[in-house]
Image 1 (cartoon, rainbow, N blue to C red):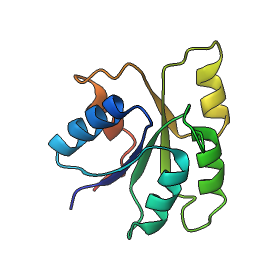
Image 2 (cartoon, rainbow, N blue to C red):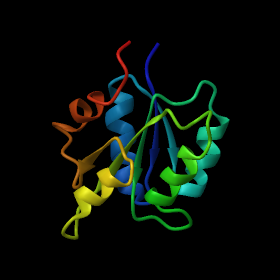
Image 3 (cartoon, rainbow, N blue to C red):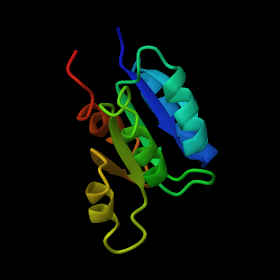
Image 4 (cartoon, rainbow, N blue to C red):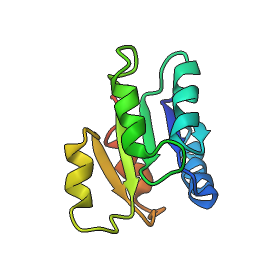
Length: 125
């Protein structure tokens, strides 16, 4: 059984790229275009996803707000959540980790390295 990954990204080109790279490696990929939609998707998945990758700067519910909402739900709080960020401002990496994300992947996405970066956070199967 392959890992289930939820990707939350408002930039459709990035969402398509990440979904393609992960799907091509055999992972079951679910998609959402903002944090609000992401919460709806994660709540509907049974079993819960093994990993969530989320952009931080999104409309409706940004990555930080999404993480806070997810961590407040006991049935979902255990899910590994990794930020996808361009780190445009000084201190962004530290803010991401201090906010409770399990890790981060830098934008722009490097197709050669992306999947191996993501696999670091997947539970052993």
